[in-house]
Structure formats: C-alpha cells, structure tokens
Image 1: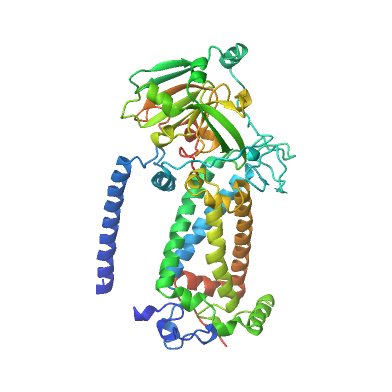
Image 2: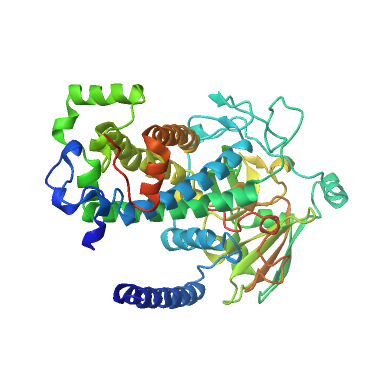
Length: 261
Length: 252
C-alpha cells in the first residue's frame, strides 16, 4: 500500500498549501491521482459524453426554450436555437425534418444519468472519508488572497505551463473550479433534470415549483449544460497546456513525472 | 503469482460471485414486487429498470401536480396524429353515437360500453399538465371516468397486472401497470376545458395518465384489455412506442 500513495500522500496531509505538498516519498513511487479519482474520472467522462450526445439529440426534437410551466409551438420561446428539428410540428424554417432518434436517446440519457449519479455519490462519499476533498480540493486559506488568486489567474491567461509545485496537486483556481463543478453544477444538473420528470415531481412537487416551473427547469437544465461543456473545453485545453502525455498518464496509471527544472 | 495478487484474485472472484448472486436475488425480489418493466431486456434495460423500480418504490401513490384555473394554457397544442381512418370518420360523421369502448381479457364481466354510457359514469376532473417527450407542455382541465371505476365495473380479476389500451387508429396502443391503472388521476377522459374533448386532442375518448408523458396518453380509445402478461402483445414490450424503440415507462 505504501508504495502507491495517491496525490498529496498521507505524510503531506497537514501541509495545506498546494505549493508545499509532499516530499516525504521518493517521486518514483508517488501517484498524482488515487484509484478512486481515476476510476470515477473516466466513468464520469463516459457518462457525461453519453448524456451530452443524447441530450443534444433530445433538444433537436424541440430546439426552443421557455420560462414558467408551459411552453409549446403555440407560445413564444425566450430562446430559439434555430436548428433543424426531428419533428415537423416545429417551425424551423428549414425545409427538412431530421430522423426521430428520441427512443434510444432517452433510454441512453437516463441510463447514463444513473451511472453518473451513482459514480458521483460514490466519489463524494469516499472523497470525504478518504480525505480527497480536504487534501486536494479545498484550497488553503493562504491561497485565497487576492494576490494569490490574481497571480494564478494571470498564469492561466498566459497559458504558462505549471511548475514543479503542481506536479502532485492542483493550483488554487483549479481547486475552486472543480469544487464549483462537483458541488454546484452537478447537483444543479441533477435537480433540473429530475424536476422535468412527472413521476418524480408527483412525489416531490417542490423540486419543480422552487425552480419556477417545468419549462424553467428545462431551460436551466440546458443552461447548466452550457456551463459544463465550457468547463469540459477549458479542462481539456488545460490538459494540453500542462502537458498532454504526462497528465493523461497520471489520470490513467496514477503516475506522473515532475517537470524538469 | 505473488501472494498479494493471488489474494486479490480470490477476493475479486468472491466479490464478483457475491455480486452476481446478489443481482440474481434482487431481480427475483424485484420481479415479485412488480419492479421490472417489460422492456428490461437489452442494452438500456438496466437504466430503464432502475428508473421504473425507483419511481414505483417512491411514487406508487403520489399525485401528479394539479394547477389553478389561471395556470391553464390559453392556446394548448394538440400535436399531430396520423390521418384519421375511414372507420373513425364514419363514427365522427354520426357524432360518435356508435363509438364503443370494449373491455376484455381477465375480467369477470367483460363489456362493451357506448360513449353515452361512458359519459354517464361518475366523473373526476383535474387540471394537470401534459408533457411530450420532446419537451413541450401545456396545462388543461380534463374530465373523465376514472379507469379504476371501469375496472371495478367489469370485475377485473386479482391477477391482472397490466391494462393494454388501444386506439381506433391502427398500431396505436400502450399499456400501464396497476399502480397507474388504479391511480385516481388516471381517466378515460371525454371532456377538456369544460367542453367535449375535441378530436385533435383525442376525442371522443382519450386515456389520461398524468404521471407519464404524452405518448402514454393514447387518443381515440376503443378497447381495453386486462392481462397478467404483455408478451403476447406486439413485440412483447408493452406498447407501440416501446416496439418502436421508446421506453415503456414514461414517468421520466
């Protein structure tokens, strides 16, 4: 067990600042990501891509969004994506109708949602108990100063390759972004999704009432998706900036090579 | 093989065996309690079964949201249907006086009710939302005879597990389990917003099951079949939409 300590190993637990993490174990034996993080990361990746593709497909059957409880082609949408549709009842202006794919899309969407939610619950439970959040995600108080945050932001905007201090852990902006995705965006996407289910809202009507209605839930589900896709794009871009081979190896095998000075 | 990997191998093997038998036992229990949908086989069976079982455990008796009059849609959308058949047009020309709803299958007293009889049965009225799997919604007031009343009247046998309901239109049928069939909001609706149910919205008789999506709310109902087994119907998946690749359970 000791040979494969995860990112920010046990010896480094007290050292809260990401820059100071871990020097107790020789680099050759250390891991950037624990098994928990690696397995849940890739499971979530598969589930998220399935949700994105199937969700996008479902949107095509009615690429218009409304606020409140009701919305249909007899009503004015707040957002019309002006995409071709898989239904000829939707006035799109295009002279053709896409084939109906909602059968498998809906099946896949909910199956992938179960996978994502199950993985998320597992991750959050073990993340708390195994100290993953405390060690790797909650930023040190000293990192939350304007100066530190500003410096980190500038380094990101310059697309600077992360230095040695980030070989084993996350920088402060990264931590805050992951916390936002895990504890704000993911819960919101699950909530707004469930708020569209007639079965679910029959038992928990507040789930949709608090949001402001069925169509508002659908609109918010779409908007949160935009933010998640934005996160995904920046996340992947940053993997390239930080060094694609090294970061991918770290997320697959756990091992990482610290950058040469 | 080192000790560690042998130990790992045995532990993993035991875990897999325990997991597999656990799933087998869970499947038996779930089947017994009616938590397995007819489309549980296939690639998307696991997700579909989880959704159906979870909602049946959580929401068996829950009531679909009801709305106030002020929330009713001013301009509801009827959705399109296939061109209406000759038989429908003939009945429509005679103001549906000859429309009948036949109830057969596992009933002590199978019957065929005229539209006048259906309209004379006790009614229930609800202002509920109808939502399409495409994402659009409207709210309307629906009036009709609770399906549970019909089932009671024909003497549904205790072993009935599903109600198969059919449209007069070809290849348009669906089915629901008893949790929905006996649910007080499940109606054979024949009025909408205070008037006779208009043809575009499913008149003269439409099944209204407000805890499920629009495609389970089949229009132009003329036959109900009480059964304990969906296998003999179509591809055995419980409906025309499931036969076409859609989920049988549409509570999500």
